[in-house]
Image 1 (cartoon, rainbow, N blue to C red):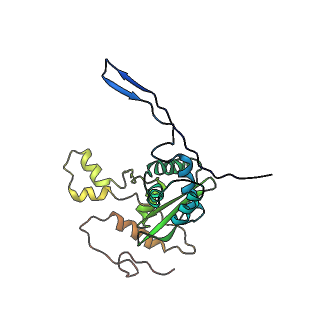
Image 2 (cartoon, rainbow, N blue to C red):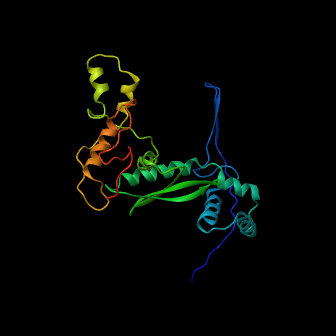
Image 3 (spheres, rainbow, N blue to C red):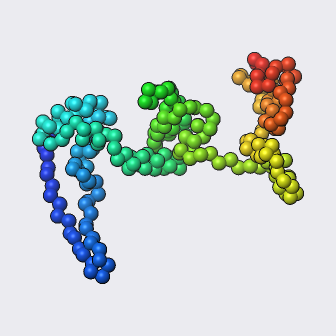
Length: 236
């Protein structure tokens, strides 16, 4: 026979207190892990589970807890839901780091969502062992790299291809101009064009894109061999 019991439990803690005459300092024992303020970890867990997992509203949660004899207000329930979230953020970050280390592959998808009345993107990073949700304002390349790095800013490794003029100048002891610094921030270029296939662009357009990436800040936009402006591709 199965049964369930919902009841309150009032706990009185007696904390040891010591005084050091030599240091003139008083030491007070701490509460067990999870206990702070007026409510214990059981109340916090129930409020979070009822609200986020079961979809109950705050007034319904208040009615339920008062039914079993708990003395709690609507404002205190709201505080349990929105305040002291640092441990959850730390746990979420730890889950992402462990998930990224768990497998050599990961799935990343994005879907539109509303955050505080604004249109943003919810990025879902997962594999069979974990799932992480990251709402961010955009879904451009830099944002996706931050999601894959667990929220850290991307760090690019500069090789001779991306760092060519500036690296050569530094090796020769010359003063590097701001224009040269603009070159080092560009990612490496894969010169070999991909094979033709469904959705691929002609080889000369891939070469043109590589040339565009290598251009300096003062270079003019030049048409492609198809007569298209820079940044546009012809249909395949």
